[in-house]
Image (cartoon, rainbow, N blue to C red; front, side, top):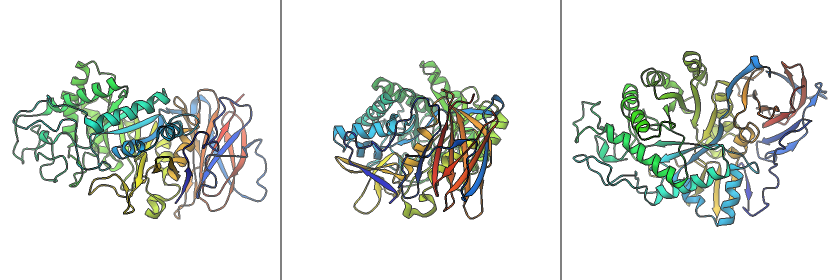
Length: 498
């Protein structure tokens, strides 16, 4: 397993360096296949290009002048699910404190973007739940709204994480609204009529009055409840994977024009009227093949939506994000879900898979990326959870909880940290050239940022089985050269240009 086991005791992560706030010389850090390098300091690149000394070479370039400025970085991180909260709360207080520092502070990964599940997801224990399971279709109201034990635990965990990094943004996404709001009456029972009772789907009989306004109020009540606990909500999507209707775990089907109508005429106005107009509503929250869905929402709910959320599944085409950017100008975009299984899962569990689902979106105008999910434990049957039947069984996540005093930071943690630790909130992505992947999966991918302190970070994914010597030319007139270890993600931090 690609992991490094930490005891979770004070001082146990001394190998994870804190980045100096500013430096006059270059630095480099690497995490490789097998984690013999795990955010490890290595020889930095040299100004002037240096010499390859017989190694294979690769050339990159970045435009670090104003003509090369692209999108602004919001952050990186992962999903806080019931699995995350349940397993993290198994830890003793000292170990939990150490783990949260590893995730949220400069001692560790400096995560600043979190997505959490509003109610149950497939990574929840039985039974599935929402924040109002006591209502009825014949008398729809939210008098029974209550976060419950798991909702309160979720909000408190998010508040603790946000307190450690003031730049943290939280996105909330529901897998299903309360069952009584749906035509089939079920949170997770079946796929027949697995739609909101909002008058849109006429082929299924209505189960009671139209619930669109109550659906909107559900978000208002949820946001207020979380805000009151200190887990301030910055954005929502109205439905996770709206075109994925499954039995066995919570889902709901929402058509594109239905989504636009719900946002434009119900959810958006409800948030505004409740004084929550600063909470963003993001479109889609599904795969890149559903570009037209995002377009429909942007076209018809643009008063409230200026952001698109993308998932990585079914062969993602990240150039779709560039298409959206070209069509809609100042729209923001994020990669909001990609799962992180163990190496035994094959290509999805490859050492470089997490780096790929970060770097591809960044090259195509995304402002951040999040993994699915942050934490789990390995169950006695070899699956990871807790999880519902029918849900993801190999969602290992970034962290595996081993015992009350021990956890494992997995390969995906280190790969994502190669970006999150060195490309801070407010950094500007730079235009660059030289990235290429061959048909056999080898090659080099890279992305660079200009950071708020003037330094420049260059993440380089070397997919070759041999070390390479990379030469980087900058539009500001510099040439840098340095070694990039085989099968590694290496991040160079270059001093501010003169």
